[in-house]
Length: 113
Image (cartoon, rainbow, N blue to C red; front, side):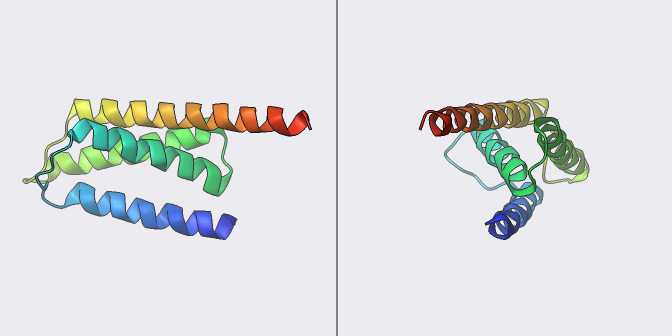
């Protein structure tokens, strides 16, 4: 199962990077919502695939968010945006918080049996 999660993590990371560095397509959904969901999933994937600490998953995810915004600053067809970074940060913290709550609930239910 861990091998599958690691593969899914790296494929997901490649897809995120690809879409972050190509010219921005017009979509009907808020750009900030996409950033939020993208990093919500990324943070949970890195936490589960590599069994890192919550801080480790947070900083790995944060590093990717900063890296993407820094690269976009230098691309003529993309822009770096503090709002995007904030949406990334909220997605990371929300994803890890939900992961924690679900994991804690699962452990409580498992111990009640």
